[in-house]
Amino acid sequence: MAERKLPGSFQIQLLALLLAFLGALALLAQAFGQSALLSRKARQLNQAAGLARNAAEVFAGSEDLSQAALLLGGEVEQENRVLAFFDGEGENCPPGKAAYRLEMEQQPQATGAGALWNCQIRVCGAGDGQELYELTTARYRPGGEGGGL
Image (cartoon, rainbow, N blue to C red; front, side, top):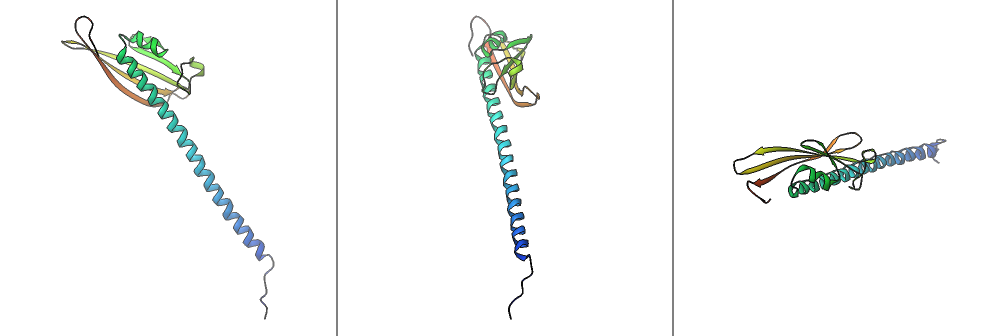
């Protein structure tokens, strides 16, 4: 005897296969979306770390905070604080076009033989103000004329 096929069974199998395919596509799209988000966050973190390292080198090589602000392209906001703005490529820019805000805060500490300045450097997103990277460094100047790093 010949088997009797139900009408529409091929269509049901095709529909099931189509739903499985669409489910797999949805999972892949979600994975690629997460990957793009993680890539963007990693790029921001790398850029923020580079800006903080540059600011630390500028602080170490500067005589005072106003010279560091000049080298960074920022301004001395308060007596012991510098504020600078950078675009997505790490170049100085006005605050309205900035992707990153860099803050340097210096705390002087007197010692018997010279002066020690601690500096906290923070890089935040300019739009949301979320801190992306923080770095603490110090600079020591021996007492007397001149001095060194």
